[in-house]
Length: 369
Ligand SMILES: Cc1ncc(COP(=O)(O)O)c(C=O)c1O
Image (cartoon, rainbow, N blue to C red; front, side):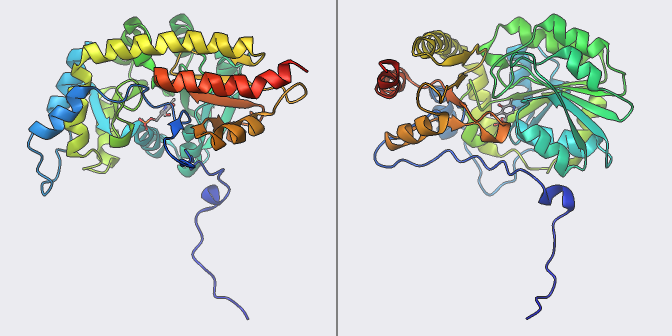
C-alpha cells in the first residue's frame, strides 16, 4: 500500500551526525560520571543558599537580561557589563551566532576536532563546515588561516579545545585575528577559561573591546558547576549583542539560573578551591595514565584525552565497557573520529581514587604480557 508523503526535515539536518550525548545511567548504586566535563566539586554552597533566600516567583517570567547577573560577571572579570549577553548555556550562543550570520553556503572555519556542537550548529544554520587540520592534536593557526577564503563568514576558535584539551598561546590567537579580514567574525569559545590564569580571558576581552569582529563565549557549566541550570554568556560589540539578543528566545535564561549564576560568580573562595583541585588531579592523573602506557594528550582543561593501543592492551571501547560495569562513565570519541581515545573529566578525590584502582585492574594484565 502506498504511504502518503510525510513532512521531511531540511536536507542539511537529515544528513547530520547526531550529537545527543549519552552520559549513561547507574547500573546499580552511585554513578561516577566523568563523561561530561562538569565541575568536579559541584556548585558553590552559596548557590543553594541564594536559591532559598532570593524569593523566586515561579509564576513570573524572568528578566530578558538580568542586570544583576551582568554586573556581577563584569565585576568579577573586570568587564563592561553593557557588552554581556546571557544565554541558555553557551551552546545557545553557538546556535545564535551561526543562525544570525550565515547565509546558505557560507563557510565556517574551525579546527579538525572542534567541539562538536559547532559543526552541528553550522550545518543546521545552512552553512558549510571547513575543518583545518591540527598539528599533534593542537589547533594550527596557519592551517586555519589557509582555510579562510572569500566565502568564509565565521572562524571558531575553541581554546582550550574540547575534546583534545590542548590550547594555543595568546600570541597565536592575536596572530589569527590580525590576519583575518574584518568582515569575518572570530568566535573565541573560552568555555574552560576559568581554569586558566586570568590574563588569558583578560586578553580575549581586550580583543573584543578593540575590534568589532570578535566575540568571546563563556559558560557557568564547568568551573562554576551549574551545567544543569544552563547559563552562558557572550562578551561582544554592542551591534553583535543587539543582533544576538534579537533572535534569542526572550526568556531563554530562567530565574533560577540568574540567581545561581550571581552567587556562583561571586564566590571566589570556591572558585579558587575548584581550580586547585583540578590542577592537582590533571597533573596526577595525566602522570598516572602515562605510567600505565596510555598516550596522554596534555590538558589545559578539566578533562584528559588519552589513547589506547589495541595492539598491546584493551581497546578504548573495551575499556569504556568494562568501566561502565563498575559504574564509571568515560566518554568514547567516535563522533570525532578518535576511535582509540577516551575522554575523562576530573571528579572528586574519592572518585579519582576509585577510578585509579579500576585502571590498575584493567591495564596491569596487559602490562605483564
Ligand atoms: C568548548 C565548549 N564550548 C561550549 C560548551 C557548552 O557549554 P554549555 O553547557 O554552556 O552549553 C562546552 C561543553 O562541554 C564546551 O566544551
